[in-house]
Picture (cartoon, rainbow, N blue to C red):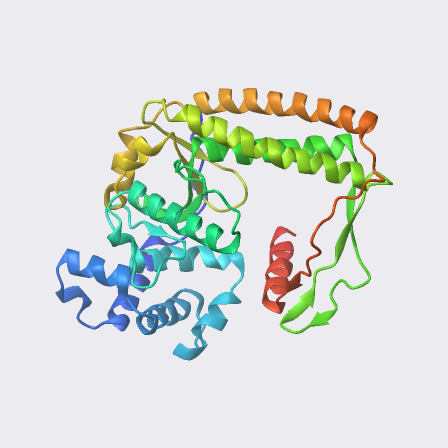
Amino acid sequence: MKEKTYKLAHLDRQKLLLAARKALIAADAHYYAWTAREQECFRATMGEDARRRIQRVLLDDLLDIKCRTDEVDAVWNNVDLTSLNQLNWARLLATGIGEDYIYLNECMAESKTLLDFATLYAYDYADYLFQEEARKRDFPDYKGIEYYACQHPCWARLLIQEQFYYATLTSLATYALDEIESAGDEIIGQLIPHEYIEGNNHGKQEKGGFLWDVKIDAAGQEAQLDELRSRWHGYQRERWLALSESNVQRLPAVYVHDKDWDDDPHRIFVFTNERTLRQIRWRHFLSDCNSQVADYAEVEKLLAEEIDRANVWLVENHQDIQENFDPAVVKLKKKNKIIMTESALDDLSRLDADKE
């Protein structure tokens, strides 16, 4: 089997290394006089001022974009997605930790860094507690859910064999659910064809942004589509819980898969359960994962079975809705107004432009 060419092989790695080195010196002139552990601690805990000085140097050295430190965030956010790869690679060298320079691209509590969590489990369980507290605060009737590994995927950046990669870290149950949802949505589109159309108020300026007014046109089957989707969401919750419960009994394992979405190198790491997370240390991420790697064909087999199950379920429920559902009975729903910020709309436009 022919090995795939690394997607960012065209980038000058030596130039990126030199830019990162210069940026770290700009952040603190004493950086290279410190021990390796002190350097790592600085990379993980640096403040906003040091971060902006690093990014200003990278913009200048790699893209020939000159700006003041107080302009860095605005300039960085307007860089095209293709150029971001080399910026993110060099920035990783200035912010990542451990053997693989791993950087978790997630928000953390104030004063917390990845160095505060020895293992993936320690981080994931803390995130679970945070999410549960938030749900109980926002929804008084919420009863809580038992902890299972990676209820939500998280995103990271790291070096794999000295090459830059984006990464998704997830559990087998959550990964399976994402694939089931994607396949199921396609099936729903076949069962009840529909499209999204802009409402009269779409794009209307509101305080804080613009109205997002998009409606569904299903050729008179809007109520049936809504009912099928409602049932589908319930099915997904049930399958995720069933898979999470069954995966507790699996042996610790890590499944690795490269997604060929676009021009970015992107690797997915799928962990079977809590026991696996407990054995993966952030500072030794790849070496710990490699000791647990299992055949991805096992995941493909599970996905095929689950997608077939979902297909049968959707067809049966669609038939039941067509035969027994009364579209005249309207479910009461709280009406929400969605306001998009101008920057969010700009991001959508940039994504569309890059796809073209």
